[in-house]
Length: 300
Image 1 (cartoon, rainbow, N blue to C red):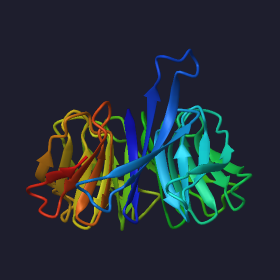
Image 2 (image 1 turned 135 degrees about the vertical axis):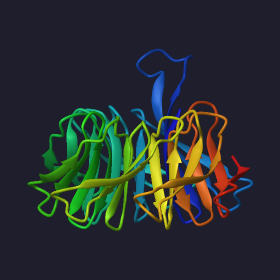
Image 3 (image 1 turned 90 degrees about the vertical axis):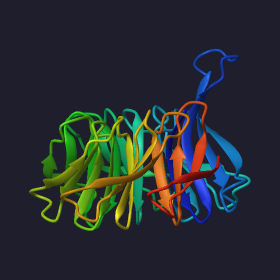
Image 4 (image 1 turned 90 degrees about the horizontal axis):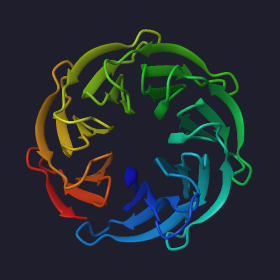
């Protein structure tokens, strides 16, 4: 089952897990980091790297992939040679790592039962926890911008944490979304939250007083969101990829959709393409979104 996707330099990094029923527990379930060359979107090719947990999230920086690996914690994988990925270090988070963001010398892990964990990755072989914030619910995803981490917490919405001192992160504000916050993306003065019940747009220009300014009730269950320019791209579970015009944050409007064959869990956007991690059996779907009103699958 594929959960998340990150795209960089014509390469898509997909996090998921597999079940090998011919093997006894506990080894019959493991995570996967699938590295896909998408330079030719119509003919993607892949290399698979197995992780010990259940890979839920991935971020890439400086030739390394950082995998939120569920019970396997945070895994750091050298992907400088895309044909031969190799783990160089790991950090065992206290719960189940679900999402990850990287900024500078730090990785920020959203841990379902351990909140926000801040990990010093300046030495990739021995990453070290330096600080944490215990969220009031299951942390599912994290985005980092400037001195703040924005954490999607399943039962209590969007939490904004000041991480200017990584050893002493402190919550400065929160917005309790009406559904179950699954993912967050930040662009400019707004945070975009995939809230299971739809897309919530939150003004975070004053981090101490985040305020919802608009929302779009997607037809399915919003599980992930990516933002590029005037559009938000929502992975809407059973209802595929939804493209929402957010140029007026107070009045977001759907302009197009593509009903993927599986269950859309994750989405990333680069250039004219959206990359959808499509849950069970349906893999990575590559969708041309150059015309947002008429998205078209071009490869998988």
